[in-house]
Length: 212
Length: 147
Image 1: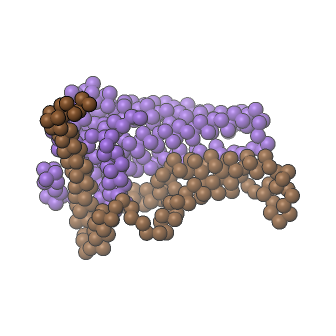
Image 2: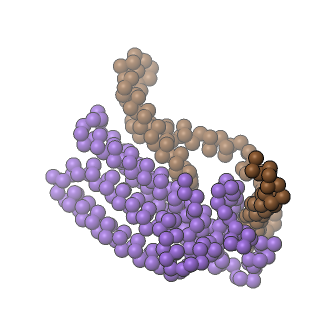
Image 3: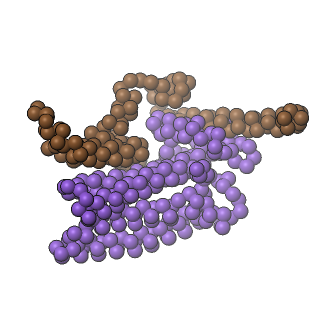
C-alpha cells in the first residue's frame, strides 16, 4: 500500500495542476453536455442513458484521480525542486490521504454502476433498477463536494481547529505513526497547519514554540 | 476565507456528514448490501410468497438500499448514543475541557492547534527515540544482533 501521502504546497505546483485539471475538466464537461443534449432532444437516443451515466461518472473520477493524485503532485514537485517534501504540513498530508481513500471508493462505485448498466442493457435483470445509477451518481458528487470543502478549509488553515476535526487529525496521526514519517529531515515534527488567514499573526504560536 | 464563507463551508460539511458520507466506504458497502438484499428477495420469491402477513416481493428497491445503508452504519449510530472514549481518556478530557471552558473562538482554535501539534511532537519523538535506541543497541551488541 502506498503510504506516502505527502505533497507540496508551493504556489508554483498548485498553479500548474489547477491549469491542467481545469482544461481537461472543461473539455470533458463540454463533451458530456453535448451528449446529454442529444439524448434529451432526440427520443431515439434515450436508451443510451445506460452508457451515459457510467461514462460521465468514470470521466469525472479519472479526471479527479489523475490530475490531483498524491503521486502526480509528488512527481511534479520533484521535477520543479530538489527540496523533497519538507514544506508539507500535517493538514495537507491528511487531505492527500483523504483524496487517495475517496478516489478508491469512487472507483468502486463506478465499477458497480457499469456492471449494473451492462446487466440492464442485456436484459439480465427483471425490472428496471434505475435508482442504483442515480444513487451512485449522487454519492460520487457528494464525495467530490466533501473533498472540495475540506480542501478550502485546509488551504485557509482552518481545518483541525474544531473538536471533530482535531479528533480526526489525531486519529490519523496515531493510526499511521508507524508507517508514515511525520518528522521533517532534521528529526523535528512537521508543522501542523498552514498559516491561518482569519486570526492575526500575533495570536498564532510560532513554529518553534509549538515544537518545544 | 471570510467568516461568512467559513460558516457556509461548515454547514455544508455538516450536511454531508449527516448523510453518512463522512465515511463513504461504509455507505458504498451498504449500497451493495441493499442490491444483494433485493436480489435475494427475487431469488426466494416462491418461498416468500407463502407468508400471508408480509408481502416482501412488493418492497421497493430503494427501501432495500436504505435498509442496507442503515444496517452497515448501525455501529456508528450506537457509538453516537453511548458515550465511549473517542481516542483515549486523556485527549477526550482535554477536548471536553476546551469545549466547556470559557474561551473565545480564537482561543479555542489556538488550543486545538496546540493539542494536535503536541500529539504530533509526541509521536515523532517516540519514533526518533526508538530509531536511535536500535542504532545504539546494534553498536553495543553486534554479536547478539547477528544471532
